[in-house]
Image 1: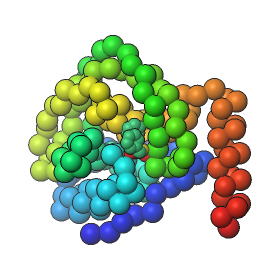
Image 2: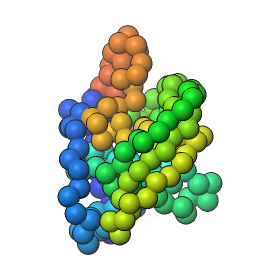
Image 3: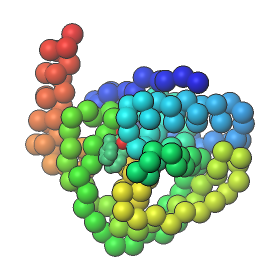
Length: 167
Ligand code: K2U
Ligand code: ZN
């Protein structure tokens, strides 16, 4: 397995729209294993293929307290959502930034699993937040884009300053 480098905002590649996976192959399964390893090592509770510069509709999520319940979603689609809730979010591509975002409270997602079989999942709470956050990544959207332009400008400046200091 391999740990991939995670793109850092405001890298333009984070705004790429991912392509549907046409067939789930051994190569797909190996990549998903790499994504999971990369996510757990970060550490995080979700990761989208976009974040490792692979523009395929694949996300992995593990919102369990024991960090041993990985769910892989291939070609995920939101087929139902209800309610609204606000949650403080972070992102492995925007380190050190945590801001509140409003999202659907309950969702139903349809996707392919690693065997290429269709499944649906009802989710709420942190799992629902994480799945929506990762599905945004597949559409080229980073969570800071829900914030005001002023906040986005301040975040870009903060990250650029931090990068200059670490060079
Ligand atoms: O996309 C990512 O960068 C993964 C996020 C997923 C996430 C974002 C917001 C809310 C929940 C999950 C990372 O896991 S950010 C780290 C983190 C960990 C636990 C709870 C919140 C954020
Ligand atoms: Zn993220």
